[in-house]
Amino acid sequence: MKNHLKQARYIITETDPKLLPLSLAEVTFVGRSNVGKSSLICALCENKKLARVSKTPGRTRGINVFEVRHDRWLVDLPGFGFSVAPQKQREYWPKMISGYLTSRPQLPLVLVLIEAERGPSQLDFSFLQWMSEKKIPCAFVATKVDRLSPAHQIEQRARMASALGITPAEMYWVSAQKGYGMNELRLDVAKALGLIKLSPGEKRESEEQEISC
Image 1 (cartoon, rainbow, N blue to C red):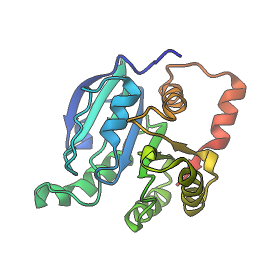
Image 2 (cartoon, helix red, strand yellow):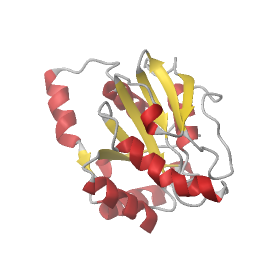
Image 3 (cartoon, rainbow, N blue to C red):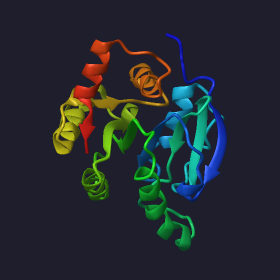
Image 4 (tube, helix red, strand yellow):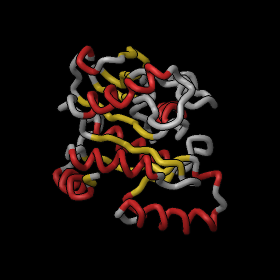
């Protein structure tokens, strides 16, 4: 299967959403610190050096933009929650994240990442409540699923989906390290960016499956 994201390149980091240039389409990754956003972006684009991956939570301290094709972006937002970043930066992140998510009209898809082993936390639910109030649609991605045994994966996927109010099939179930579930997510990201043309039937199906957080 052709990887339409493979040519992605880093172009800019910005802390003020108002200073970001316009794009044609953006797919954004958001979630708690250390949930695996950078690792997932690297895996999707098959480039381990594309996004900075660290074992230390809070290393993403700005809005990191990767251009897949002209004016079609992948956007890595700072993680919310625990961080070793300076206090001033931690206080600014909620404003940075909310400012970005509420000011980008060219945002067809927000991927909310949740670590599969831990499941959604109260902080995740608080963030999703805010997303719902702002009417920002999103899809859920369970990360690091390789840390669960195959038998436990089925049970945990059902438990997470129930907590989020969706069906298990509506949640991406992925492992950036092992490559599990990456093809499906990669294809849907490429479609959201307009890199793959959808038939009318596919477009309607995609619209029906859109989740309002």
